[in-house]
Each structure stands twice: as structure tokens, then as C-alpha cells.
Amino acid sequence: MELNDGQGEHKPTIVIVGQDSKCDSDYERLVIGTPYGLHHKGSREILRRTKLYFDMIQGLLKLGYRVYLTDLLKIWVCNPERRYTGMKLPDIDQQRFIRLIKAELNVVKPVAVITWGRVAGNALNRLDLGIKHLNFIHPSGAASGAWKKLIGQSPTDSNKLAYWESVITQELQN
Image 1 (cartoon, rainbow, N blue to C red):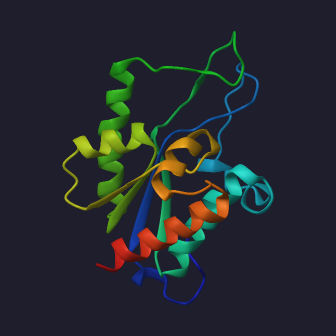
Image 2 (tube, rainbow, N blue to C red):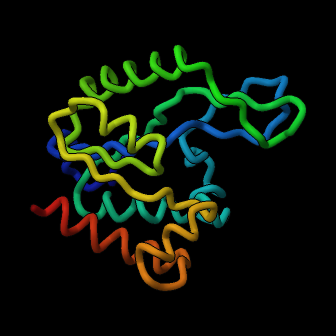
């Protein structure tokens, strides 16, 4: 993603890595989409849980970065007995995706990688990337307790966004 501001190829790239793609569709169908469903206007502007993600990304765009979104684990497997609940991928498959993310980053050549969540953060910490890595708590509501502890106040979307913008600006300007 990038703003159409005439800067084109001269923008540095930031990569945001999440854990895995989630889907609330029928487990018998394969659904292909973009990370956080941001290809869908409603996900960017209306749906509360993904609007925050897009607001965070817009902060990076406004700072003059191009943003590339990806997931550490390229698939999410639904438990057919408990819709909306995932099944853990076998370790061999997880390791394949972790090796793939390093190759993916070599192609994109970011100036920094931002991870959202413990799984993505820990996996990228183990890789020798040679670039700045900013590990954030996932912005989802599921991590509200961790956000409250981190920011010392109610983990509203506006408080999370204010913290994000403060840290991002400080870390990327150094």
C-alpha cells in the first residue's frame, strides 16, 4: 500500500507481519484475500476490528512509507468441529512458512519490519534479518489486557492508535 503522492519508487518500505490469516467462512471452502481483509472498503472504514489496523497503516503511509502486509503462516486451518477456532499447523509446516518469510523479506527489502502479536514477533526475533524489527502487541481486542498494561490506560482504539503513532514516529525517525 502507498499514498499516491508522486513519490513512487523513492519510498522506503515497512513490512507488517501478522501471525496468520483468519477466516470465518465455511471450513470446507478455501478463501483467498488480503491480510486483515483490507481489500474490502468496509474492513478499512467500518468494521471496528479491522478499521484500527487500517488507521495504524495510514499512520505509516502519512510518514512517507510504502507498507507491505503479510502473514507469517500463510494459511489458517479451521477446526471443522468448532467453527471460528483454528487448528495448529504441524511444526514442519510452520517452519516452512518461517523460512519463506525470510525469502519474502529479501524480495521486498524493507527498512523495518513490524510484527503484530507474540507468534510473529518471536519467529522473526529468531531470524537474522539485519533490519530494524519493531514487535508490537497485536492490535486486536483479544490482547486488550496486554495493551492496558502497556499503555497504562483503557485500551480503546484511539488510545492504542495514539501509542502506536508515538512509538512508530520515535523508532522510525532514529
